Length: 319
Image (cartoon, rainbow, N blue to C red):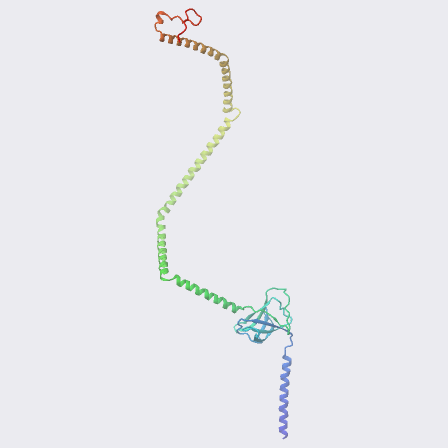
């Protein structure tokens, strides 16, 4: 009987000791960190995210996920309740996204900020602030993948329409035309070979022409130099132009003197002789007219003049 009571006491002591050890471990391992509650409301898919997952701010762990539940006020919306350290810089521009750890695929909440210096976001147990959730890397890849698949499908449909029998025949014909053009282009060098072979001779002739042109240029320069010398000699003070000008001046003075003499002496005599010649010609003209009218006047002389009014023998004409 004594042995049984001793064993019972030993068992009770062992159980009490184990319970005390468990309580001590829980006491020492309990988290004494003060945290602020926040919420994330989203309609996005959150695969791999579980309670007690880490919350990180730009890679630094700042809290844990307390609970993931459906929002009773909005159908299909998910509420993610967070506990974040009090010193975390959660501001009004802070946003959340899903991150994944390496190859394990364990999800966590990644917090980030659009800017710096924004005011802190107040939150408490009575009024829990909400942080917006933006699409994560996998969501963006999924959306872009769907867009790429849609684009690929559209391109495939376009290629299918483009490669119908009619268009395929046109493409084949275009390729044949390209081949023919390539063959014709390949034949061009053979046709150009005679012309190319003549290029050295043409170049040599061009060089000779350049030499001739250089000689002609030299001759022209020499002629220009001689012309300049001639012009300088002609325009010199004792040159031919000045001598010619002096001679012309003297000839002009002589001509002016002769002209003056002609005007003062010869012209009056010529005028008098001209007047006498006119009178003589008039007399000859009257004589010729008289002979024409009365040729007998050569033998019998000129008839008497008819008496005028008031003269003896005047007879008035009958009306």
